Length: 253
Image 1 (cartoon, helix red, strand yellow):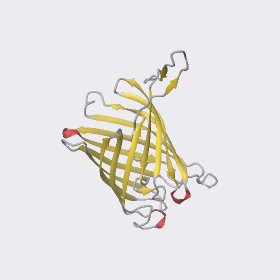
Image 2 (cartoon, rainbow, N blue to C red):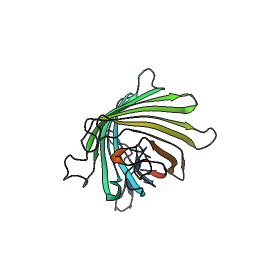
Image 3 (tube, rainbow, N blue to C red):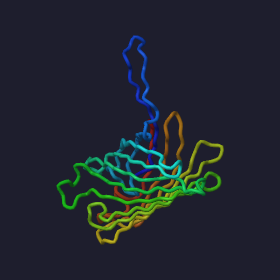
Image 4 (cartoon, rainbow, N blue to C red):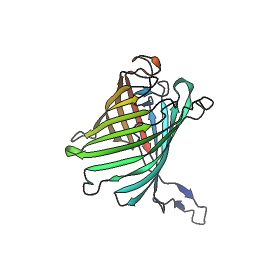
């Protein structure tokens, strides 16, 4: 998944009483908190691969989280969806859950996240064998460095991979750096997708761009490309791999 632009909102119900007062939904639930996100993207690119035929996409999701041990351990579950399937016009729905927090003793410098992520493609390959859906186990570490530089490492593993045909791994190193005296943040990442099967995918993807917040929205523009992309027997210049420039605009509830 791309980096999500998350926001929070409250629900308001009108109570038709003599005073016609409005009732506000509580900001916090008795157990945990709920947040939501919605994003417009000029194209949906996942780990260097175009997922929706280079068409614009409206994406969004919901998350629930609850602190278990102060800032050291929080449980979370969520779902996220986007148009996918390239020219087939299908939908991708992701379901995930895990635990995240800061590492005790060095909580100002090191954080962790670990969980399960299930990729569901309703209507795509449901009658095929094997199914296109797959499960990924993931873990990540985040490091806070001087000058507000943030660096993170992500590792994901699936015993089946997309299409259920091969062991699949994905590693990614990303970084963010605010530009002093400006509202802009530079970001970039490099990832490697690997498979132990001849029919699987083995290539590198990378991206870099700039993001900001303005008018109550989060904005970004970035360049993304792949190196060594050979999935489905096509070359670097096809719509699936290759070079792309993506624009995103997100809001939060």
